[in-house]
Length: 58
Image (cartoon, rainbow, N blue to C red; front, side):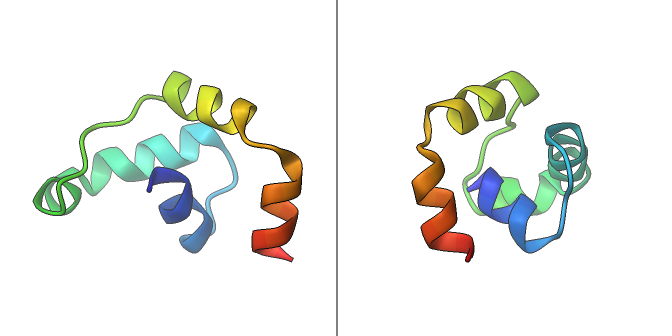
């Protein structure tokens, strides 16, 4: 969910995504999303195959 929000809002880095998520914490909490750290996003990004991103975003 965090990576999708980052993509849709045009964020350029993991730090930018996490800063945006922190700023929108109250709204995201109501949607059932918990706080997400930069390390968690990096691990998820590392495990996803590059072909998935190519398929989804091209």
